[in-house]
Picture (cartoon, rainbow, N blue to C red):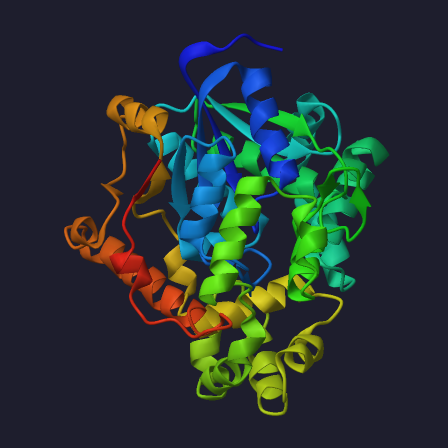
Length: 402
């Protein structure tokens, strides 16, 4: 355990969908282990990696994060927030590195030792892996499963087992992203407490975001509140009173299907994560599916996971294209406290930094187009809330200062 060191900063890449006790624990442990005085959170916006809408809007989740221990909240741009683990990690790490003032990257893990994750990253990047990976892919396995088996055959069971956990897999991608950027940021794994990722089980004061979202969608708010800080609960109550939570993509089911039915095979082929003629399978399934669930199930196969299919469908609806994930265009500030403000004064950003529509208008054309894409997606999110919201929140909402 380290003593707090003045001006040191740890970054956390997260979704906070919604912010719960496990997230508060993670922030506290990040400070304890690294000795960091400041916590920067790089957070997904209104859509998340599982190919779904966030249950609470990004500005409310920013308030939750600041109340829960974060000092500065930055937005992970939509194309990266809705990507698979590799691009999700690269997007977040790029922003952390571009700040020019981040010393540590703190992330959850389930293997108990960051060194094990580093060794797993070595295994994943081994050039010998490709032949084994291709062999397992040819057998029709999902990419993650194929890579795990390829690592098992070369490095053994211990290295392979690390890749069996979603948290560990994402942690490995964070380490790989730091290497790719030749970043000086130090990776720090923090052991997960309580319920496992995506588990619907609870453990003491901890429950996964998956379990909490299920409670909220079922109207069991009292049960969900047991696993969330009081500040998060209060913010959530305000959102529910305003009709902005819980958001549900099924509210836009017909609109999503309509958007897809209007796309050609060529347009589908330009979506992220399309390969091996998958656009043809999607095109045909779209013609017959009468619900999102039916569409996901009809496209899914041994080769394509449910999460990958959901992300592709969400990309089609929100306008994300494959070329949108080539680079991070800017750093968007969502909120901060006094320490966050001081941190910004010491930052040396290598990307444009914005906090308002006025700032966004001054961006280069390519970067401005991503901002407008984000704005359009947020307008689509506003149709998924219990009470339909007006357009323009991404441009009109002011920077949150605590």
